[in-house]
Length: 425
Ligand code: HAM
Image (cartoon, rainbow, N blue to C red; front, side, top):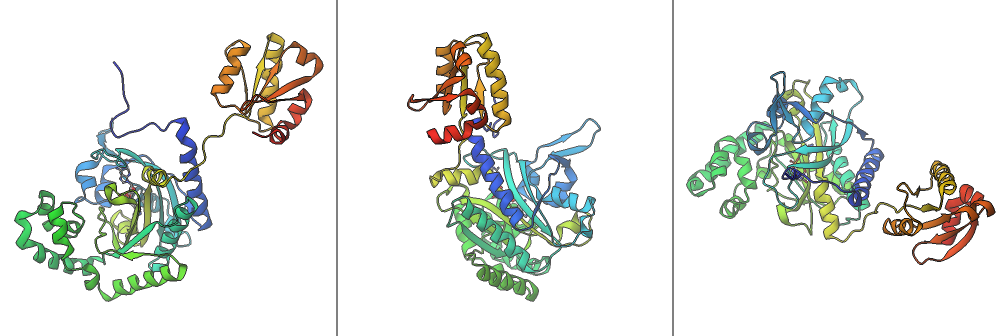
């Protein structure tokens, strides 16, 4: 019976890998420019970490986690996101004693049992960053600026940033009462999810995609009008810092985020061209209570994560061309046993010198070898037979058009890259 990849997972095939690697490398470079260091965390963690970290009332914890019992009877969960694991690691490794802010970035797979559609998978990839130990809005602004530079470097000049503040537990609790009072008279006509949310987490109703609920939410009281003085000062400071660093933004009261840990700043980068799923490529915000929630000393934190699949879809929609895997430089086609032995050792020396070279591994005829080299998209080929071995001269063939140039074997060995560059592709 044929075995397929599980629904919601994908193979990333060789033809795509160069694009992925480019996106990952540029992210690592931009993070390094900002003083962020890479962290690698486990793929699975104790289930309780996500229950406490991401939050019991979230869709992620209630419906979407891949949870299993290990052979020791412990409940484990494949990480549905990176923040909780990074926070656990921050606490466990005593990073609180490092100079703050402690700034970390990561490149992870994450797992959520979701309804699969374009841009929404069950295994997906996130590029993310977290900063610990700074209360002020400057670190929020720096993170957002880092993202803006990343988008620019990936060829997206007009990524749209939406920011909001969802306050602290004190002002949000008061605001939640206002929201409950506002939605209460309409609750019977609202969707089942919202009927559950009104008691548990009324803020999430603002994020409901059901049209009727969405329309009601548009006229709901705005949390931004009910921030406490400290949260207001923080938000004003963030907006000033964004202006100062030249990051354009829109204030969007509808951004509430789907995870429980957020306080104050929340933000999303949305795409102009990628409209399904609301076009969210990246989301993040501040989580000043999370480190304490997970058992550490009270420590403020802020971060974001970007879906790599969604970023690549966005680049595709914009016809932004990313590097492809470069073709092999040189194929050595030997004829006969002596030539095959020589070609094998020359290929090894060429590779050591940095030339992407290959030779026959399957005992093919010359014709079949050249056909193979053509199919592989190799830039140049050289046939080596007895006469080439005795004269020390080979014909370097430009595969694109079959043009040939004579070159000595010793020159090929010492100077293949320069010869090929001079010949041209
Ligand atoms: P999130 O909004 O749940 O936040 O996910 C961040 C990004 O991951 C989304 O904007 C989206 O691009 C991508 N993503 C989420 N689910 C899927 C999926 N099923 N398929 C494909 N892509 C997906 C977080 O995960 C937070 N940890 C972000 C954060 C970090 N906040 C503070 N620090």
